[in-house]
Length: 89
Image (cartoon, rainbow, N blue to C red; front, side, top):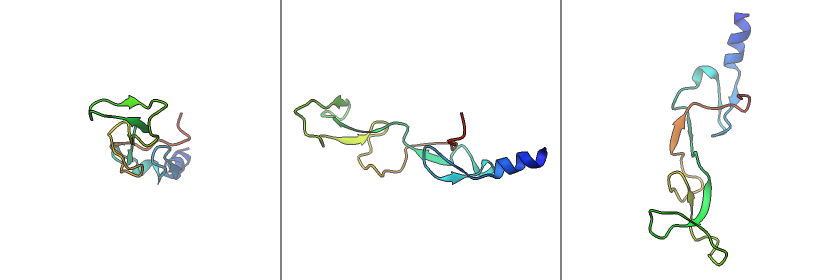
């Protein structure tokens, strides 16, 4: 019984947030780096408020992560936490 539990813990899983593989024994509170919000396209004219795009706005008025404001879609995640598996409920 104990052996089965150990095997499950060392089984590699894929994190649904950062898409990296990990094992239960290597999963720490800083293992996963991700953006908790979406990459959005909105106008933010005063740098403090975000506005939804209107129909006549340019589609590239502003593109950024809603959580941290990073404008590069490949930007390093702004939040760290434990990995979360697709198998976890």
